[in-house]
Length: 125
Image (cartoon, rainbow, N blue to C red; front, side):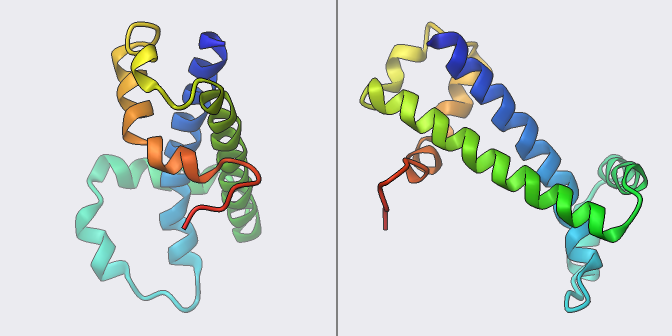
């Protein structure tokens, strides 16, 4: 089970990174969004290069939006799967401090609330 938790965490981290690259592109492609001046100073040159490369990777606007939506749905599914595994352990994350790498454990602890929100069949307010 520890390996499954680690795999899910890796998948979530990867999907969060991909969503982070695609979100500015989707926002800039939106006809109602005029936030370039707001976002532009906050994105470093390296970040702009990654975003530009990601935009070139996809052939069109529809493809970028579709990829973004798919990544969001995949992340939600991965978080739900992770929530189910952690629920079996009653969300006692301390058990994982020695079982996971320091980075994975830190990610797990810092995303605990978000993970709990994805428990299937339970609606949290």
